[in-house]
Image 1 (cartoon, rainbow, N blue to C red):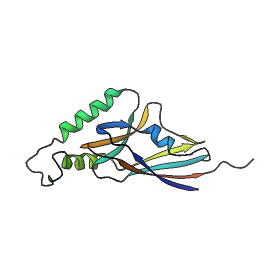
Image 2: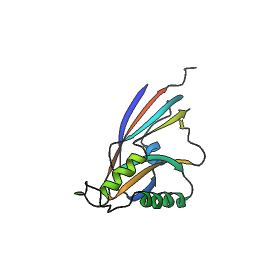
Image 3: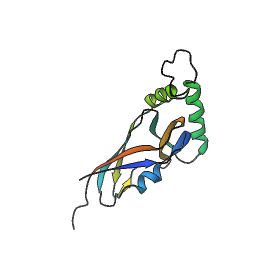
Image 4: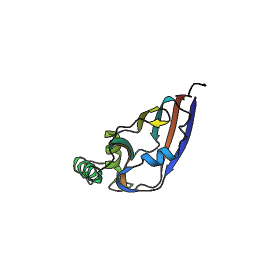
Length: 143
């Protein structure tokens, strides 16, 4: 069985945002006994990752660290027409990932206790972000 749909996330400010519930809510996994969810972001200045889902401090620390590693306003950036945050956003997105793969078992994403799906928004005003959600799985066997 294959299922695919798009999910458009509302604009969010620059930072690391938990999107686990939004992704779950966009899918009906009740008929998946075993399978995988593939998440793909259709943007080059935002990314996806899996990380700590409980402490907001982790999200803030990640944002501050990435801003230190990839600062705005570097004199060697040539791609600057879209603003000072654009080229750093592309670099940050390349350092993370544009895809995630999560196992599914009995209709449930098999994330660890402290894991959540993140949208990593690297633009100050990134706008809506579109995800392609693809589920490949096997239905429960008929009794």
